Amino acid sequence: MNRNIPARLISSAAAVALGIAFAGAASAAEPVSLKGDVQVEKVVTENGAAKTVLAPPTTVVPGDRLLFTTRYSNDGDKPVDNFVVTNPLPAPVRLAADEGGYEVSVDGGKTFGKLAALTVADAAGTRRAAQLEDVTHIRWTLAHLAPRAAGALEYHAVVR
Amino acid sequence: MTYAQTRIATSTAVLATLLASQQAHAANVAAGTLIQNTASASFTTGTATRTVDSNTVTVKVDELLDVTLVTKDSAPVSISSGSAVLTYQLTNTGNGPEAFNLTANPTVSGNQFAATVTSIAYDSNGNGVYDAGVDTVLPSGTATPSVDQDKSLTLFVIVTGPSGMTDAQTSKVNLAASAVTGSGTPGTTYAGKGQGGGDAVVGASGASANANGPLVASVATVGLVKSATIADPFGGTQPVPGATVTYKLVATIGGSGSIAGLRLTDAIPTGTTYTAGTLKLDTTALSDAADADAGKASASGIDVLVGTAAAGSTHTVTFNVTIQ
Image (cartoon, rainbow over all chains, first blue to last red; front, side):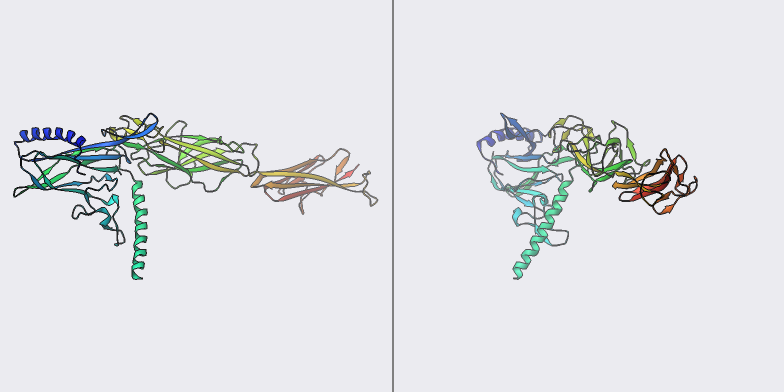
């Protein structure tokens, strides 16, 4: 999901700063930086009401929901086009929900599309509709990144 | 119509797949597994196409503590004077090897009698049935051996019934298992106690489970009725000197199961004399001597060893005396 809301812009400022620092150290090879992060959803009870909060993944067990975030920024002074971010799903997790904003692959990244339009072969050799647990890759496509443009792409996954 | 048929076929396939995927979900990712996520981007600047990778974020999966326990006795297990064996199955539904503490409790609400727990054992040889002297008995307070993720262990609780139970009474014995690492409210975390040095987290089961094993008492009972018939020397039924009294002992076995070593004895009443050679078990004459047959008789009394008597059977002993 391409988040351009102000809250995201505040955090992306940090990413930009980090990207510049990194680019400086690596002698300015890449104009675009990607910064991955992961958090776990924890349910806490506050004033008697259950509430879901994001926490560092210090303790994670099967069934937990994780939020994977990839922050991107165009640190250069030229625009970037055809910006495609591909994220192979780690094998120990499955996609939690089809949240939109991205295309998925159920064949190891060979082809991408909307989950509802994809099929996979079952044991009997017939095709069936693809399920969340069949997703192997996620792909976001942004046509254009202006200089200094930044944002965050995220997906939820459940530990298998 | 071809279209409709195709749709039906497809929906069947989907249904089958859903079932398969639910089964696949049953297996949790093992404790210690690393979840590693890396994104990569491709883009163009000017005419050049470039790619860049993100850093890799890594999450280590901690140990989930979960267990199920069920009775394997689909029908109540008969218990009589000896011991009875109740069978349970424990399954480690967590994601790491774990041992479990066991507690067998014969006091369950609604019990009509309280069995006594002799021991708890596990199916060492994996054949599903209790083999005394072969399957390992767990000393009191000893946990099970470690059970791997998604593996099951068959457990046996050996019990005896109380002397006061009556036929067809029912009772249950509760077996409870809890993870040795820890149990309690789901979500409780035991830092550093998990498989591979990670944390251990109590799962939805509370890391404990229990099940009731059913028992039914099988007790045979003996009803004994004694009657007398008098034949006097004058063709009447008066108890006068010289009259013959035929005593009849009828043992009726009730309940279920059988009685072992049933023995009927009676004394010759004072003022009467045993009539030699009149002892019978049912229709079979028994000699007075203590010999190979089931009975013996003397001036003091009779003694008949019926032996094993099944519920529903009756056994009748008759003998004659003469009034002096």
